[in-house]
View 1 (cartoon, one colour):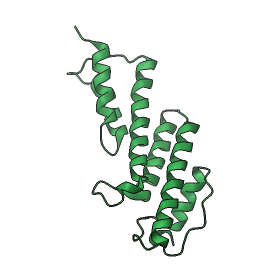
View 2 (tube, rainbow, N blue to C red):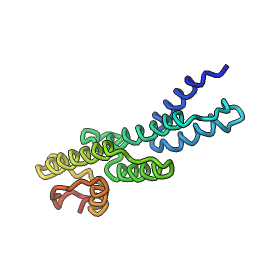
View 3 (cartoon, helix red, strand yellow):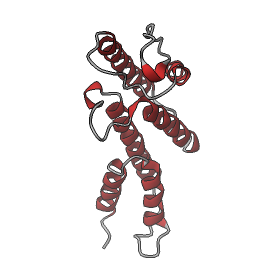
Length: 163
């Protein structure tokens, strides 16, 4: 007999830890759970589908926060502000397709992380402690900040990609 709860928990974990584009894992899980001849052939309840969607959002949150963590700037897995912008856009498209809002709490959390990143980046670049790690244009950065409803501090001219 199929243990529905166990199967859904496993698929949730797969989505949550699926790498850089979690909605691909989401759609793969939907196929496996409901359409794959070798899968369990489940008709998902709305709560079960919501659980899988939440894992996509949670994974995007983790990825974006990772790329806005100043301590990650010199690590091999760091992708930078530009990738965070792409992932915010991907999350928005996913939520649009799934008819879900992006929560205000998530927007505020990402805005706060971006603000903290920029404050530290600005301080360290101005004081000569490091070269700029911002890998997007000033226009991209300002547009992202606007989407997050974040007013940016004045950025120094030597912030590389932010010029």
